[in-house]
Image 1 (cartoon, one colour):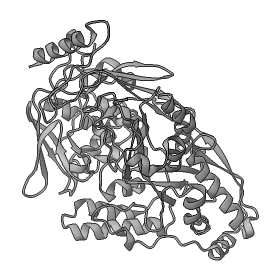
Image 2: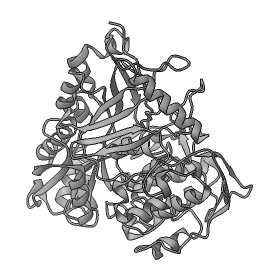
Image 3: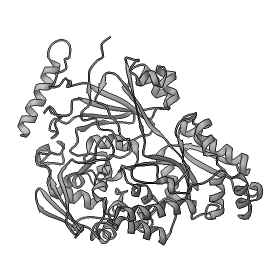
Length: 565
């Protein structure tokens, strides 16, 4: 089978390069092979390893290189097979059985004997899941699994320096295509967790060959392989041995190349799009569409021949985080005062130019099957905010310490404008002066982890469509390394969230999750601000481009077809 794939890839290259001008080979149903997809990122990619890919910017590239056992379809609601052909749960709910797909090969890489990628087996899945439970410094997603898989917590504690010779008792390989996972207790939604992009599968040989440098040497099973990685950007090339085909039986992917470069700001990105040096703009503000290509309605109606616009309600939240364990935010009255002093409607309508939806209920954004409207959120109440601030020892803001808000943004873009709106409202309503410190995502994360940042702008996009994915941010029952960044500690919160993960009755599980959500508001752990849409703009030459509410990008079925002039 592998020889056949290689022969097809060679024929495609010969076909594309024959003659004086390159030609695209037309596949069944009309897609074209060949071409390059180009887009930009405002943040630099520092690691390409699934368990280290904790931000959406990294995941947009990582998802093209690595694949998970299961995945969410483009509707954002249905779980479908990926590297696992099937997922079944025992009658008592304690054991999950995964059948691993045959005919899937890792990327060719020097870490393998002869440099040829070998076939994926259940042993690779076991290794990857165990690594995601380890205490290794590369693993940033330990809390996803360590409290769910039997033996994972012990394994985590014993692997802070090395994973050599250690295993998780609850992960067992039956044969090359079958893996058994024993849970601590029955867990509703474990299949959703396995769709998390941070649980992409990679081989043991890559870690043995590259060690801690594995973050710079991605070896996965995805549709694309790493071609180059420089200070200017990242280039991916077509994986000729990719296992997947489209509905017509065409070998995927169609593209030869995917190129990511770094943008200075959104205007820089828009200018590159106008010049057609990039093909795709992600997270474009709605008002910029009119400035660039006419009105949003015209673009969505297809009147603009060269470009297409796609808009999905995003399962995301923009918020300000606070260090609950340090003064002045260790005082709940200060945290509540900040929340009550903000007019979220004005932040959306004025500072975001109508973009997004004010967060007026809980921390979890609206999603199917979850009644977020039952959560009593923060109201805009300046009088109460001033009273609480005075009770905390800062009447009319007097004596409040000077603080910097860490904002991973550049001057003038929508995130910066949101931060400006917050600081101006806090000044006007509480007489508090906060300074905005613009920084990179990496700098912000370092400041939060070190405790230097006491307040910061952040956001969360769902990794899978379940309230638990948002509520896990505040869980503090795991190891210190994977504890939440807000320094929030609540045994009651942990107990309710743990009970929700075990609860098999849907109504009772929702009740427990709602309790957790309400507690986030009642304890004023963070400052929820707004939800927004995921609006993208693609050059009309880019076909089969689709998005979903989790903002997950899959380039495997995209192809290029030049529009008629």
